[in-house]
Amino acid sequence: MNIKSSLIVTNSWWNHEKINEQFLLGRKRNEFNDIIEKIDNKRILSIIGPRRVGKSTLIYQTINYLLEEKKVDSKRILLFSGDDPSLFFDESDKLSDVLDVYFNEILEENISKLTSKVYIFIDEIHFIKNWQNYLKTYFDRKYNIKFIITGSSSMHLFKDANESLLGRIENIYVLPLTFNQFMNFYMTYISKEEDLKLPRVDLNNLDKSIKELEKIYYNQDLKLKIQKILKRYMLVGGYPEYFEVKDIEIWQKQLSEDIITRGIYKDILTIYNIKSPEILEKLLYYIAANNSQAFAYSGMATTFGIDTVTIMTYLGYLKQAFLINILENYSTNIAKIIRTNKKISILDNGIQNSLLKQKNIDNDLAGHIVESMVDFDFRLLCEKENYKQFYYRNSDKEEIDIIIDRNVDIVPIEIKYTNQIESSDLKVINKFIEEHSNKGINEAKFGIVITKDILKKEGNLYFIPYWLLNIY
Image (cartoon, rainbow, N blue to C red):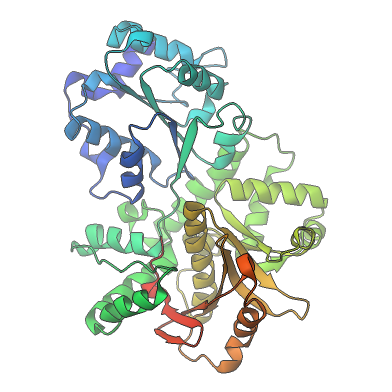
């Protein structure tokens, strides 16, 4: 198949055909609105996230929006994939070859004299050699083109590309669903009901947020419905493809084979020359079994019989592939942050359960899972708002689960997934707030305690049940 024939097959809308409903699904992720908001900005738009999280679906939904809502001429929308063997059979095949065929033989317009905007979607762009140099050239020549690209992890889009695309690209991260997002996918695909709309927890006005949450908190029927969905989310995690599978046995097998194994052996190994790739997989299992615990790189290196630099590098790969989250210990001393232990957790609780073959969630396991879910929720918030996320452990081994540095203040967050919280359980977070009062940009004015089912304000602490935590 030649380039023109391949593009015609992929871009069925050129022949006035509608996009297959299976590609569109019945539900849009929140990130769809972010894409639409930026669709006509000049900068290249990159959609970044792990495999099977829904990036390709977002592309088709965006193309459908351009066709149906913006009434864009169908031939002015081009889609192809960087791992399409009919376009890129070997390293001699270039991105410019595909675009030359499109502009000369399909659109039949001079690229430098386009009559109106052209939208070019490139899925899995990291498989194309020197892609960043081609996009830089097209962008700098100010062609009337909007590029929307996807990659399976941050390493794909930023390795060797930061400098060349600086100021030319903006990113939208698409990660596993938060509980609030999962809940409304559940309502669409399983309950067949309207969305459950939780108020946003606003860190700038928690007093108002508590009052709004009370309206749902005291609705017993609604509470039971949300808590039922939460139990499912704790077990299966946030990958949207679950709603096509539904069976837990099949789902965990699929997570293990497609997202974990292929994510390691295809995504990471296509970028880096790793001598012992099997260690990456063993490392992931080790983290799952010790989830949300503090680790010393040297201790992990000893456990795996490799050097500290290698363990740091491998953990970096797993983080860039969106499989784990790594938190530094909070301190105003940069050197101390570098030296101290890191708290490491599996990013998606469904992956953790798949690795450990957990089919049921008991009370003890629920506490550990909620801690990693809260880590994930606040990671998303921090990426969106340009905050920094830490954990805290002092020389007396007193710990706080999460510290959010909002650049103007800091917010300590403790996770107590129980309904029996004693004053002694809050000693460390209260002490932290007291020690960090009147500290300028390092001031802690209040703290948050994530609970199982306690909603209240007590002194400087706001108690919020996880099932009501909608921060992103």
